[in-house]
Length: 205
Image 1 (cartoon, one colour):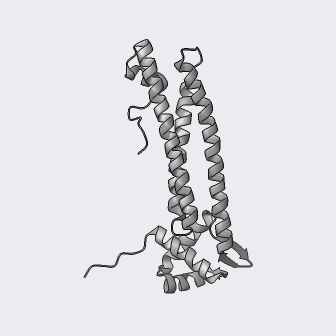
Image 2 (cartoon, helix red, strand yellow; image 1 turned 30 degrees about the vertical axis):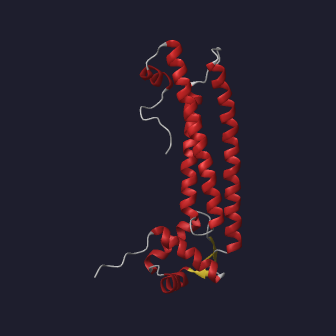
Image 3 (spheres, helix red, strand yellow; image 1 turned 135 degrees about the vertical axis):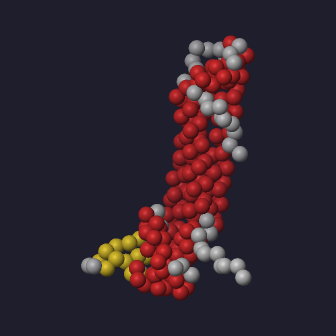
């Protein structure tokens, strides 16, 4: 007979948030240890670690009154926090798209043979921002999965938009490399070294 698999950290976090949302009450740590083990299958020894991680992420509130420390989380605030976070991510996307547009215009000027060109720093900074944004979106999806499907779907769509933007920027960089190679007969390795483009530079899957 196989041994029953224990809950992962994310499963414990999700179940604890479900517990708070269902109870809509304030709890001491000892109460959480007892009730979360009984109702959600979270071992009492791991309750403190899980609730602390949720507090650190701003998903659970806490306050010390006298010598007692209380914890709570209500659905209304959680929903507002997720929607506010999604709005922040959308605003960040707009900022990055605006920067991308500006840099793309510089690339177009370079293609026409004018003196203006995109610097090595601008190229790598723009690409790094897009890829970092994609990674952040995926982290957000993992953090909020199973808590609010509607918000998760919104974040997932924004992640796809960020991914597409990053790949369009990657395509622009390849176009510039091709233009430089054809116009000046440079080897790709020379171009990569000049602009600091890594050897494994490629599209995001």
